[in-house]
Length: 91
Image (cartoon, rainbow, N blue to C red; front, side):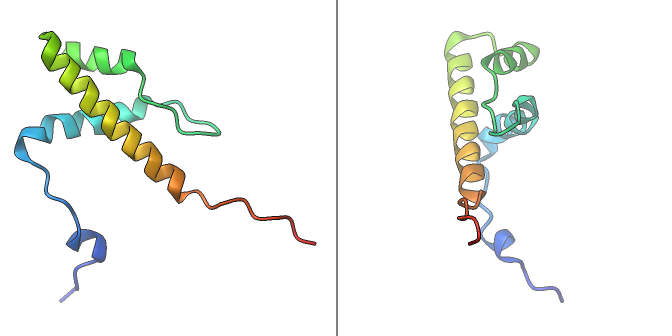
């Protein structure tokens, strides 16, 4: 028997009513610019995604955009924490 890995044991449960937003975030994060830093998901991409899935109500769109932006902020912060601090040059 294979023991459970720590990241599987601590995996949070996703509320069923947030599955669409989670899938949307996974799709939309591919639209980020990359380079020296991980860019934000462009607002235009969020808007286009909402149009594709017929999120027409302004309140629904605002909720959707806020959720995607919050997930994006948390994901970008996590990636920043994973970057090791610069080391001084050897003497």
